[in-house]
Length: 227
Ligand SMILES: Nc1ncnc2c1ncn2[C@@H]1O[C@H](COP(=O)(O)OP(=O)(O)OP(=O)(O)O)[C@@H](O)[C@H]1O
Image 1 (cartoon, rainbow, N blue to C red):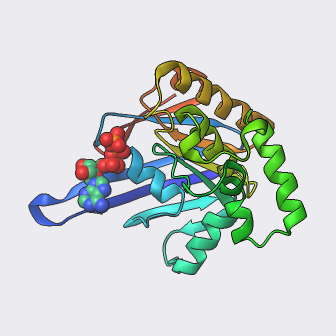
Image 2 (tube, rainbow, N blue to C red; image 1 turned 90 degrees about the vertical axis):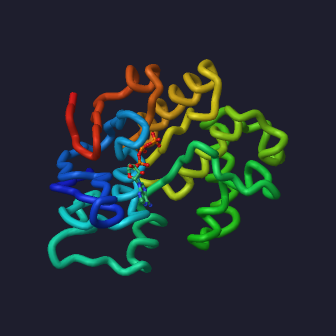
């Protein structure tokens, strides 16, 4: 599902050069929940940004779902990267990134509006997703009226709206207390199974690491352990 070969991302130049992603290669099969771990500054976010098409590598190649995205002689346009994110990838961030003036249901529906999904179909999918994350009753509430854990559940529902094949989650439980974080992790694990999506999750969370099928450890931009 994800094939990364010798991926590199370097920031800055001269003495201040940082190899945030340094010659990283791996394959992630479909349906796998893969945790990416490592110290602060190790390069987890930089790697996830490449996998999700939010940033471009300086070297190496990447294929998602059998489609070459980056590689020798392959420079996707901004429009092509936008299409990749819209059609293939779902994102969950530490800070939830919900729109405060929209209800839970409207937030989940945003990716479907972007894709111009018909209203009836959109409503159906939004209801299904809110039920999936256990928030069928909260559909009309705005993010400010929901707890942190509930907000992250809305964000997970939104990330699944466009039936992504790849789910990228960057520290999804970073702002949650440990029990709520565990619930959100279990939910993520359950949706990976039920929606047959492949997930790559940057985390410091021991509970998530235990739930993961695979753990990639990054240190100074390098992949130092794969188990
Ligand atoms: N846009 C940027 N410009 C310059 N340097 C950057 C940029 N983004 C990341 N870096 C550097 O790349 C390295 C890896 O950062 P990254 O955010 O990927 O680490 P991380 O493992 O996700 O850390 P954390 O757990 O704290 O989020 C760090 O040294 C960081 O300072």
